[in-house]
Amino acid sequence: MTPQTEIPLQELPASYFGQLTQLAENDNRPAQHVEVTTPPSLPSADHSSKAAYLVLAGCVLIQAPIWGYSLAFGIFQEYYTTHGAAVLSGGSSPGTIASIGTSQTGVLYLMMPVTFTLLTKYPRLRRWFGPLGLLLTTGCLTASSFASTAGQLIATQGVLHAIGCGLLFTRSSLCMDEWFSERKGLAYGAMWSGKSGVGAGMPFLTSALLNKYGASGTLRIYAVASTFLVIPPLFLMRERPTTSGRSSTTTRSEEEEARERHVSFAFARHPTFWILQCGNILQSLGYLMPSTYMASYANALGFPSITGPIFLALISLASVPGSLLIGLLNDTGLAATTVILISSFGSALPVFLLWGLGGHQVAVLVVFTLLYGFFAGGFSSTWSGILHEMKRRDSTMDTGLIFGMLLGGRGLGFVLSGPVGGALLEANRFKAGGFSGYATQYGPMIVYTGLTATLGAWGWFWTMGKRAMRAL
Image (cartoon, rainbow, N blue to C red; front, side, top):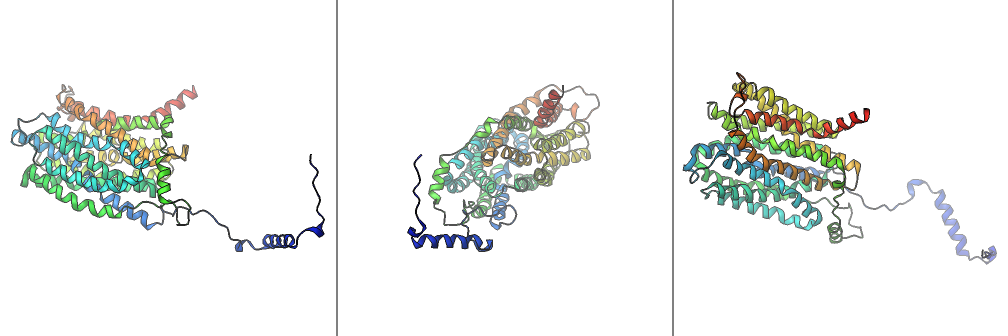
């Protein structure tokens, strides 16, 4: 070991003693006078940021042009079915007509994993998604007003229009997700409530427009309205700043380039995600059946023509408080599987007991639509609980990307539900004696809808099964 050289105190420079004195004074200085340089932090958003709630307002408002048409497609479907060859050349089967709406909703959801991944990896693309989405939605609605076959409507009203709506939805919801971390349940609940609120009025508006202007005129009116409904919310959308100050040595372009290199799919390695995703897909396989076929069901039973739009409006109206309250449940600390169980059982029981057993009575069907709309309509709000759960397991996970994957799973179920619904209508009737709904042509559909609603709680069943196995 090398011996250390001792330096006599008298040979030390005077500046050395000055530095020691300064350090001693700093040690004795009161804490409140010590200046500490800290890295800039993200602005508080969930509780006090005005910008965050402006973004949320824009996200709620833009749900009208995104979802308005698909929520009222049951009215379009009834119009296409009853008018037959007068509207569509050669006519079309009920299953083919139903595929127009299910393809629109299914494609809108299915494209979400792709668009959310793109915007997560390439944030600079966000500024283009809004204008491009507006162009596609208005253009496709206009083009569909000149369509004369079901195939043309599936392409324009269904697929292409859905792509435009998907671009708008991705841009707005991803922006909202970044602004809210602690109160995601509130944010997502408000967003889905906005969607449901639109659905409460759209059936009546669509029915009135179809009766007065026909399908072509109604679609052109929708195209013009979409333009004026999309532009204001787009101006409310703004990116959440990465830091609160401008003194950071990392520029915005450098941050974007860094983010382009890091898109984590770590959530895919967690079994919890796939278990919850499985329940999400199973629930979506039957979720659209009441809203898609309730107008046709009412017409088949000889109810007044206004009854169908009322049923659809009630489903959407009840979804407004359902989406918000179920979303808030996720912020209370309840387990995600528990909240999903509430939504799943709350929607399955009305299907089996009210639609199935009392399907010939208007009053019973009104109660059914309210309960189903509240619990089933709030199912998407349970996703904020899934995001909390995944974030708790790994804080580095991108919740916006997980949200896009959940939307994709829902879209898979919606696409498959189109042909399934047509097949169920053509199936043999259940011989259920005097039972109401089960004895109609829609009996198999009622049973199927109830089962898929129950299986939406697959994550809860899985958790309880694991606990039971451990107890054995």
